Length: 167
Image (cartoon, rainbow, N blue to C red):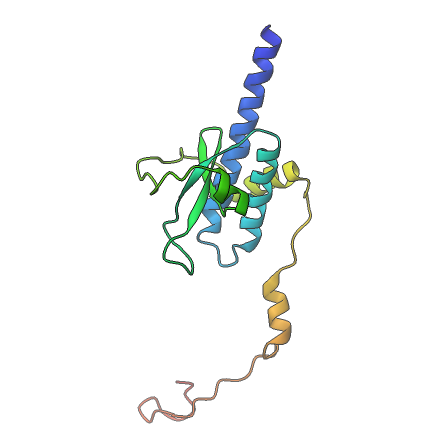
C-alpha cells in the first residue's frame, strides 16, 4: 500500500513540475517578441496532459482580451495547482459550462524555474527534444528588402548640425 501512495505522490510531483514548466513558458510568451513557438509548446503540453488525464477542462470564461469580437470565451484547464486557458474547440463550446467572467482572486502559485529549463522539460515531455519550429522572422527577411544595410540618407539635412551629419 505504501508503494501506491509513493507512486501517486511521485505522479503528483511530476504533474506539478510539468504545470510549473507550462506556467513559465506561458509567462514568457506573453512578453516575447516571437511568442508563437512558446504558445505552440504550451498547447502541445496541455493537450498531452489532457489526453493522459493529468489535466482537466473545468469550463469556459469570458476572455479578458477578445480578439475580433465583442466577447470571446476561453477554456479553463486545471493542471496540478495551476490554471491555464486555451482557445475553445466547437465541442468545448457545446459541452463545457460557462462560468462567466474570470475570477481575479484566483492566481497561479509563484514558480522559480528558468525558461530554458521549462522548455527542456516540456520538449522532452511532448517528444520534441532538440526539434525547433522554423523561425518565421528569418523567412520574412528573405522576402523583405534584403539583408544588405543601405546607408542612411536624410532628404532634409539640418544646417544646425553641419555638413555631413546623418541627422
